[in-house]
Length: 172
Image (tube, rainbow, N blue to C red; front, side, top):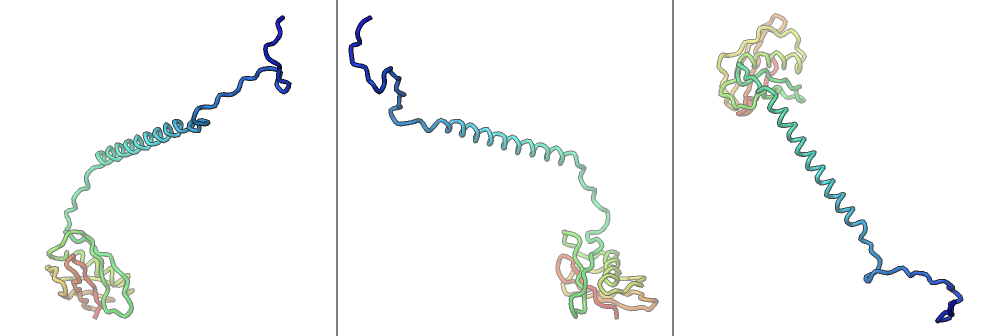
C-alpha cells in the first residue's frame, strides 16, 4: 500500500462530490414549459367546443321548418292593459311589427271585448261592432257599438301611434 499524497481532512475523511451549480444560479424555469403547454391545451379545447357548438346550432336551425305565414291581417287580437289611475281610456298594445295601413276590425272588436272585461270589469259584453275601415291615423277616433247587459252603448277607439296602437274608452 502506498502512502497518501496529501494529508487527510479530519472533518471529511472521505471525498464527497460537490453538487454543481449552474452558471446563472438555480433553474426556476422548470414549470414554465408545463404551464405554457397547459394553457395551449385549454385554448385548443375551448376553440373546439365553440366550433362544435356552432355546428350543433347550425344543424338545429336547418332542421326546423320555416314558420308558416298566417293568412290573417297584420294586426292580431290586441292585449289589454289595465286602466291607469283616472284616465278615461285604456291603451291596447300592438301585436305586430309591420306598420299597418288599417286596423283589423275583427281584432279591434276582440280587443274591445277583452279591454272592457279585463280592465273595466264588464263581464257581459256582446255584439261588438266597429266600422269596416279603421285607418291608422294618429289621434283619430272611431266609434264602436257594444251591448252590455242588453243595453246598447258605444266606446271610442283612439289610434295613439303609427304602429297601430290604440286606446279603448269606457262605454257611454
